[in-house]
Image 1: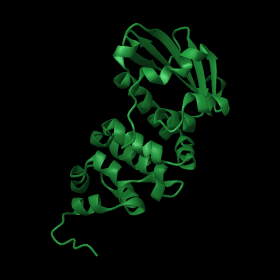
Image 2 (image 1 turned 45 degrees about the horizontal axis):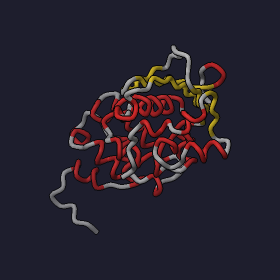
Image 3 (image 1 turned 30 degrees about the vertical axis):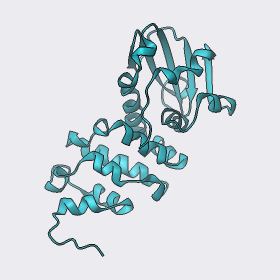
Image 4 (image 1 turned 90 degrees about the vertical axis):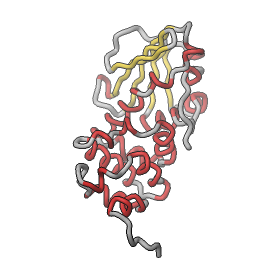
Length: 220
């Protein structure tokens, strides 16, 4: 057994792993000294969804969101892109579906992913492009039962809105769990298309190469 003599309570929290860490996070005061000494990226490194139960990934994100309400340092936007990709890619489909089944978590995770798109656009590939993409995420609460996002790629930049303002070059319909797999390099558009997990309306050739306009982080 490791000798914990001389360790602070924050050190002891940082040493926890798996379900023990989740239990602690759910009880932790985000403004207390233990939380103040913690780093959200270190917490992300300490959790491997593959070692957790089907509901534990949801518990982790929910605990972080609760803490971020009072301590912004724990917001998902503070998680390094590669670490965030690793968390998502390591989660099972059942774990991801548990997350998207809870409305506040679904909205926060989807909003976070789309908000990062602008940072991952490849200006060298998109500098001569103007294209509008409408995303429809199934099992949502918007029109037709979808959560909708509009991404506008224009001359090397990418902006995102929840309002459908422009005529799309392509409309992509996909389940959130498959969308997570797509943006973390766990599945390709071609595989999702031939297996019926993604539906495309509009310019199919453009949709097939869409991911190539982004430098999406690879899991660490």
